[in-house]
Length: 103
Image 1 (cartoon, one colour):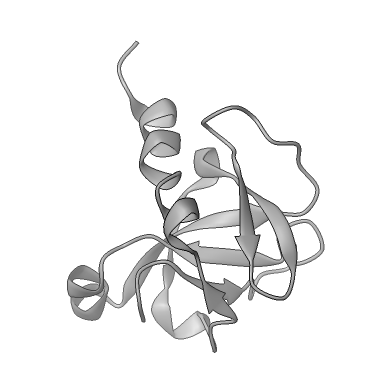
Image 2: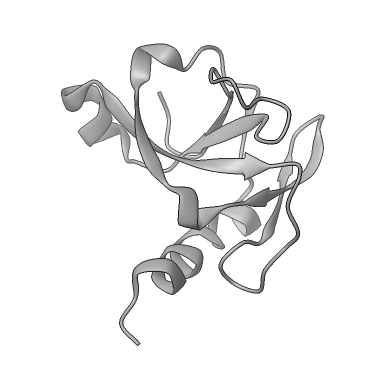
């Protein structure tokens, strides 16, 4: 399971959240059995920094919903559909800082 890989959502809300992006590094997820993911929403509008648009190979652009970050059992994540590109990877840390940063 590689960091920044994109997986089909195994949950019930696949219509509004078709994909999850793994953001946890491989070193940790291989030891815990869980992976920290951020939902990629099809039904949301972009919000500056916190919820940017990212490209999912073969599926267009979706909203990275950083405020919905969570951990999921790694076994639930099946074959990745692709991986975030370098430019989209760079949007994750600022989005998370916006959600959990000091104000």
